[in-house]
Amino acid sequence: MDGKFVAKNFRKMKRTGLRRMTGGTGMAEFGPALGVLLVFFFLPLVDMLSLGVAYCMCVVLNNNQVHEAALVSAADATSASGTVQKAIPDQWLSRLGHFAKVSGYPQTHVSYRDGEQGSDQVVDKFVSVQTTCTCLPCLPIPLPCVNVPGLNGPMTFQITSEKQMENPDNAGQ
Image (cartoon, rainbow, N blue to C red; front, side):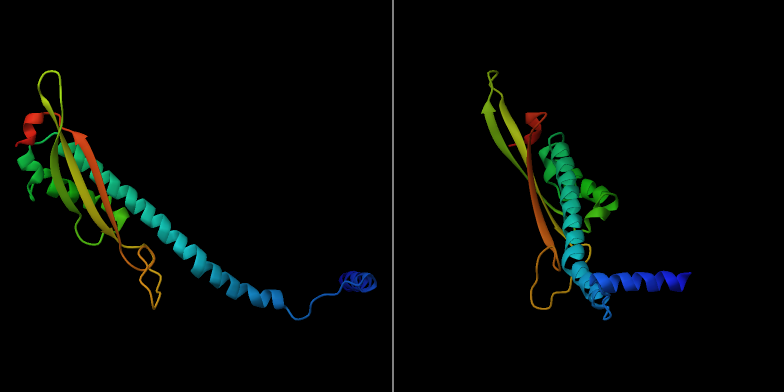
């Protein structure tokens, strides 16, 4: 039964002019095409997605820092061992910082500025927190002649946020 079915279909293909490819060229080109797709499309896409996640994690760090800096005194916020510059980044590195693949320690700069004077003669104070994080790509792609940030080199994110002080007296001079 099996041999009759094959012979019948072969005769039908011969009559209509359809012939099978005997070289197998489609199969021979599949491997290299898959390799090119993997190296030039999939791996860079994974790196770009991981850097997007790292950027979001750095924004979360900066938002937490500016929120805390608006609540505490200027001396505590600008201190290198204070809550804003030491405690929050330490907690972030032990939890969400793992998703960012940070190279080194996040750098933080805190500054204050005066706002407008209200009707009650009180000047609003604003705190600005600038956070700089250097993140590594998830899968570094080895390119021998160029260093592309995000593909085979570190990428630096610099995020700045500003918030009004809860108590303007905490801003100091």
